[in-house]
Image (tube, rainbow, N blue to C red; front, side, top):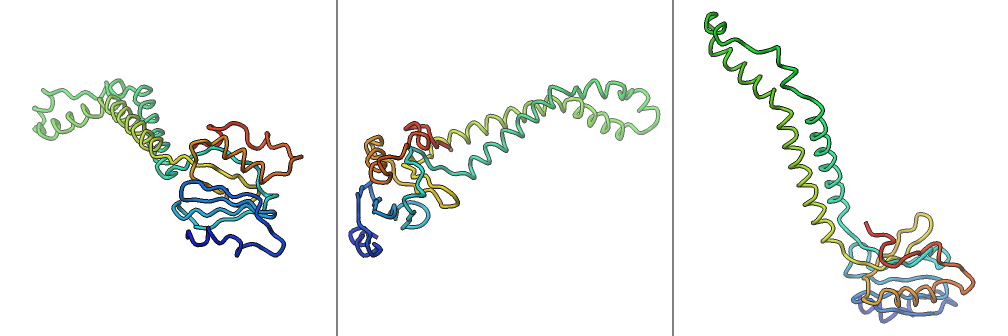
Length: 208
């Protein structure tokens, strides 16, 4: 892919010229008179991306992460909250209070083993609210742990946002993100375009 990055001229349309080119680790973004071209061979997805300059809406600091892991965090947390809420809202012991079985009666009927098993099951059901609270708390702790893994696993990126159905372009985030952003904006947008509305902030714009 490095060969193509060094031969951008071969990818230009007739009458198209390069306005600026910026190296970002192993990636490169080239702004031409017509397009924004990005070479991202080490990132997920396509090695080469492009978008017409009028479709670019902003340049922002962002981060890419595992969306499936975030979905698991949300689902696990929701289950934990539901279990805790039900565990505190329902008192199963009071509901089963009238279902107590007299041990003397059970012996007299000759069904001692069956009655004993039933009593054990009722005891378990009576403690179901406590079990639900415990399981809910464990689920919430697991969700917090998953969120920590998700947050620490994010990759900082520089995001070129686009209008319509065009995919945004993600690039490795440089150390001096403000300078890279200003340079790209100066090359992409005409001088008379107000870019503040589409790209406010530096480090929190599109953080998952």
